[in-house]
Length: 460
Image (cartoon, rainbow, N blue to C red; front, side, top):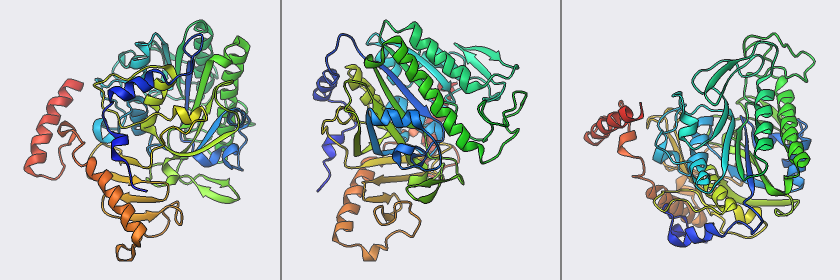
């Protein structure tokens, strides 16, 4: 089956706007939306996905009562995924550097604000250290770690509440404090539609004890104290517990049926962390462009609306979340927005939808061209910009060598041509202003570097 390139036009058409506007089911009011993103949590860690090393009963319950997506792929690292998630654009278009989101970017919080939502963000920031950025990106309230500084995040953390720095020194646990804020936010805003974006602090390394661990140390002053690999499982269990705290509060408030819950990971599990998955050892690969680094859990739950026990194997990309949130809320993205994502909301509701047949990724930790990895993939094959083709059915983790070009069969030649067309469609998508000094010294790149310098001055 050939690819339908027009289906994935990067521009939102009037027809798409109309479809998005009516995509959300009719209800007495717009649904609340909670988007939860765990930090460094690969697909293999969740019991409902076939994980065997950890206990995730609350996430398993969300999956049993909703839809579990088996083929969700994000970027290999935290900031690149956050940028794609919030803007609906591929990193090739707007990724500047690690720890930054373009202050001029339009986010899903902006779009839902225009629809009357109150918006809160709680957890890990890492999108720029200038004060006021969460509000600039459309959020009304915030409780964040790593906003304008980088203190500890676990025992005795430093957080910022609506931009105000608060340091905790009496044995408090950062993930608990953030969870408390999230629960308070939904409690205070239960009478109006709200968006809560909850990028969790857990389960990022260092792997340290939680308050439920036998060796929990409430006097720890550094994130590195008591670090040990076995604590990863305890952090997974505590992350799951915090999700359960929030969902229990929704039940207590009587707003569970009015609230969409979406859970995913921001990238693969930390490199070297080995888990048992579907009867075999599975090593985390954060930072790599293989499934180990990009394949993450995705669960959508909305009691009474999303069919219980659903399993979907459509390809999902991190650029798809902005249009999906808009569709769920009945909001149309601004017509002038350039989007690389498409809504998977119909699939969440148990409908066929319009599944993507490919996804595209441009990944560079520092935003430079020298170390970038660029590819397009289907569920069966992956083609890198340099021509390497992998059979993902035979070699899902890309552990072997790419297929010898001289040995490509007819199907592989056809797929390579189609994926090559996808890559060609993004060949000039990188804005000239984002080409960094030190890139290949061609005349064109020197001109791009000068323009990028002007743009950087605007960002500062």
